[in-house]
Length: 319
Ligand code: PBG
Image (tube, rainbow, N blue to C red):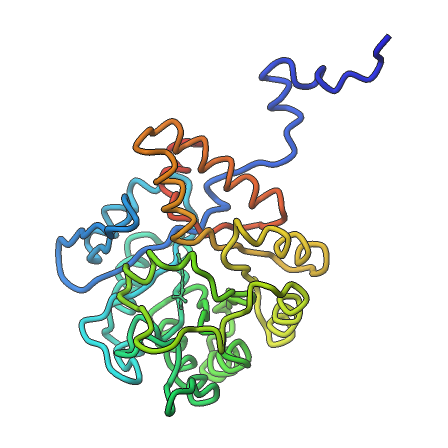
């Protein structure tokens, strides 16, 4: 006689639901937006079907359909680019304007902002270039300026993604000095030099004009180093730490969750999104099933929050 029957808890759907260990909810999803200057602009990103560059008025419209979403992450598509990315910290830059407009309409929506230079620099690197090198400490000063301008506009969290050493500390210090003690930091702590960022770079037109990002983003052969990066950011004052990408890095998410007592976010990046779009070949049911499986796996591995371009769909599927 077979006494242990694991299938007993699998037989009926309502029991399967009851014993399920991992729950995916739209409140766990952080929804990214690419905000562009102008009015009534909705420009699809060729390599990310279903994702658009939106003008502020269209972001506001789009948010009406983001059921259950509690937090968004803003990226700016600036009017002009230069060597130091000076559009990034302007008082009336596109992100700063977007924060104000969104806060006015959606008071309880958590607004997070990406803090980096790559979308704003003519060379496409995440920092200030000296010769052929990216100058860490010069970049810190600009990152702090960007973060401050976002906080002044009303951001709830700033999210430094440049992978400069000391970026969390520099930003925390700058925010505190100006009295923004309640503005949190979502740190892109373990951000790998990944081949999955391709479509995103089309969205922001941020392909590096020379070299690559391997001198500042992490080597994907390393795991121990990711834990050092995370520890460093926690010590510098991060409120939430992030691992990026997510799907090919579930081991890192899991190890971070086991080791640290801090909320963990994972970025299900553009290439991972496009891969699902491609694999489902226009079949909406297949797309939904693939996306839910992938997002649930990221959650199961230990992520508390997931940044995902499927955010709006998750709201529709699960609400
Ligand atoms: C850079 C940044 C990148 C992403 C977000 N911020 C990657 C990069 O170009 O190095 C990638 C997000 C994605 O692929 O969805 N600051």
